[in-house]
Image (cartoon, rainbow, N blue to C red):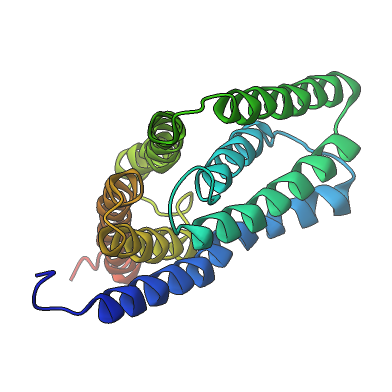
Length: 235
């Protein structure tokens, strides 16, 4: 394939896929806004957990670091999308801490400091590795592992959908954004010959498709059931 397609075409396709991935990722980043509007309005975090946002922040920081030129080659669009994601996640965490009760406030503050501490260790430790290939492999495996675990996190929600036969807890636009972003970065990784990008995003694409299939199946099933008469005629 590489012999049939010019390097310029590969580069253009890679950049297009990366830009599309950045755009579609924005849908993921803004999806928690309704939740945090509710937190601000009610001045309480209620039963919402802030841990997923802490984990998402760590994931964004590691992946943004992987995209830097001194870690991997020509992956700047990976750094841009994850840098924006890190800003969103940090904003959500700050809002959560501000409106949380005392016990949750201390817990989330501790977790946030732990994330920054762990990232500092990873960043400084990787720079101390003088062999560029080993440095690339270490951060690559870390970013790949965090991405796969992030994409796998909706599996519990998918299980709830199957058990309840309701898509209430799996918003359509969130699933669609996940699929589109994963597919874009899958192509980006393929065009850049980077398995640390196309492998986790390939898994994300498959899981995104699975979420969409579940959504349409149970959404259509709910609609069919709602059209059935509540009381059958005795005639």
